Amino acid sequence: LYLTNPKRLVSGLVMYPDERNAQTDWEGPLAGRTAIVTGGGKNIGRAITETLARHGANTAITGRETDSLRETVVDVVEAIGANASFVTGDVADPVHAVAAFTAAETFYGGADIIVNNAGIAGLPFVPVSEIPLDAWLKTLETNFVGSWLTIKKAVETWIAKGISGTIEDISSHYADQP
Image (cartoon, rainbow, N blue to C red; front, side, top):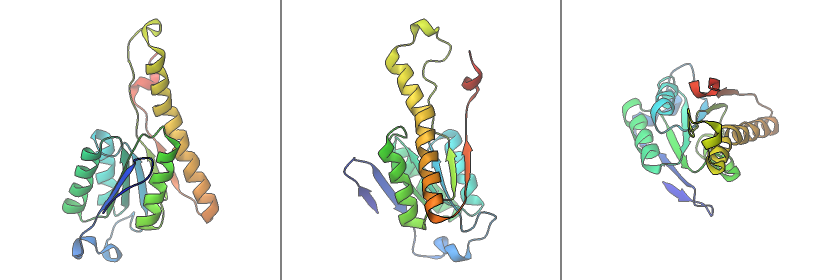
């Protein structure tokens, strides 16, 4: 199932109608929980997605590259037997945060784990005087605004539902660079 909304965000769900998706029988410490992982299609985000799925969580991953997201979701479903879905979009776009939570709500009844993993390095180790304003603004939008938008949507959703959840924010060694 692939859906497209007016903002051209793509979301997808991969499920099999057999024992591989017997969610009620799925065991693990995170069984019955759902995680949204931003930047979940590649590298560290993919590893986080796979780990959450192996521990029983449904996973709804987000990112900018549909192919890597789809590949991760298919691999998680086929190799692990867990439920996985994806939303393609830019984490710095407010519509993206809403779409990720809408997908989690539609496919799994909501999300109670957030992993803010999406981030860009911008132009590391370049003197400040050489960083173009547009590159700096894009870095801030992705790394800070994107995380804030996801956290804001999570808190709003959880307060409205009267539930709590877990938020993990990931940073790289670039966060400590002058």
